[in-house]
Length: 55
Image (tube, rainbow, N blue to C red):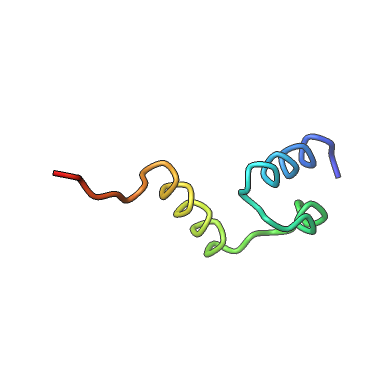
């Protein structure tokens, strides 16, 4: 596996995007669409957290 892919995987692990170090051995595998969508939904939730106004 190329170093640049490993660095991306390690960065994703550090930032909590992936939570299992075993994924670092699977970076060349295909990813199902549902998994990509789940990651995107989690990212949106972090960027736009649900909150209620105090008003």
